[in-house]
Length: 241
Figure 1 (tube, one colour):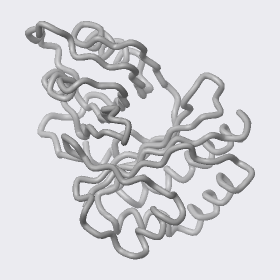
Figure 2 (cartoon, helix red, strand yellow; figure 1 turned 90 degrees about the vertical axis):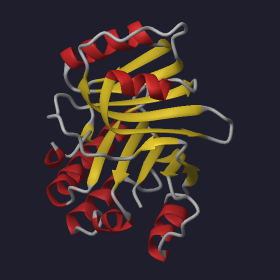
Figure 3 (cartoon, helix red, strand yellow; figure 1 turned 180 degrees about the horizontal axis):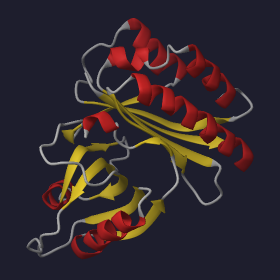
């Protein structure tokens, strides 16, 4: 019962946002050390003012979601990062492929009572898959305003460990992907480039970003791209390489 959490959080100030990310970095180190089935655990700034934060977390199942927060040091850092003075969430989504299957009482109490998530059904894609080829890159993208051909086109150009599409209640199609390989082979162009309103690219390697943006510019019509080179956590757990 793998699921993805997407959270957008408004911090009360830039300094508060920075402190939250510092705590989350230390929390991510604990999770990475002890929980390889937390596949992705990424936290970063979401706007130029550096008060909005975006979190992307992928859990293999409910048990690893529950287990990852049980470490005493993790709990201490969580309390340091978030209280009533640090800010509030503007959006909390839980993307599931099995949205009609009941969650355990304790998982539901956390997701519903503490995070107040909105459950969204997976429209297309996969939360995690093991790839045959060696990992070459670690790159996360989050796209909004995608047309229906974006998913197929992206997966013909890159190898993804995660690639999911979903729609919120307003009908806005979104895509989140963890990319591990970028093809150097030229693909046939379609008559019309698939369109994307906005794309966030999260990656710490400038050359990987440049290579990926070349593909995006060539094969997609994107209105705006926001690049994040600094983040807390990890895009893909290294044990999955």
